[in-house]
Image 1 (cartoon, one colour):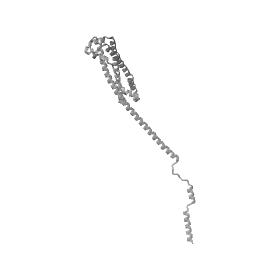
Image 2 (cartoon, rainbow, N blue to C red):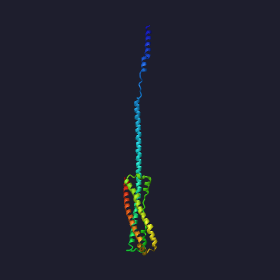
Image 3 (cartoon, rainbow, N blue to C red):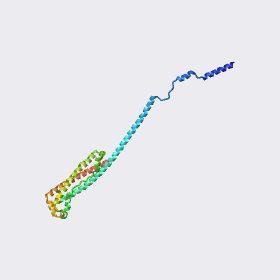
Image 4 (cartoon, one colour):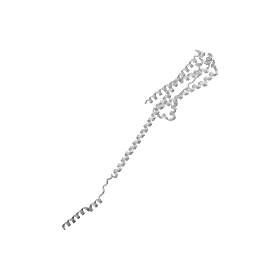
Length: 261
């Protein structure tokens, strides 16, 4: 009897230990659940920081791209400027050589005119009449290479030349100095074609080539006036050519300095 009672007590105690506590279950249900996530404010700060870094990277990339394009454009402009100045220097060198040849021709013409004017004191031999009479009946021709200059004007590439003083001198040379030279040469041409040649053709028979031709010619007042004016005007053109050739050589030197920089 006593053993059965003990057995029943043991069973009761075992059942009691196995049954969960009601209070414990309620406390577990009512206890707040701990969150494992990051707070929203911290998330927003992280997102804004991320967007800010991305924005700075984009801006930096745009700036680098812009600076790189600007450097490339500047480099291309400098290459074009160098090519333009090199072509211009070649044109000026050709002009200088052409002016030098024209000056030599003018010196021969003036020498012949001076010899003609001495005919009364020292007669020109009959077999030399045409040789001394031909040069005074020639006129000056000014040939200038302005291909590069015209291209600079038509394409707007003048803006590529950084030395503005040099650019002004170039425009002065082609726009004014060469114009004045051509005007002087045109006056000389009209004088020869419109006055000197017609006078000789109408009044004298040059194919006879004897001393009498020169005597009659040098005694003609109109011819004397024409030959004096021709001598004066050709001397003026010669001085202009010398002056402009010196100016051209100076420009060539200045352009050379720009090409070496």
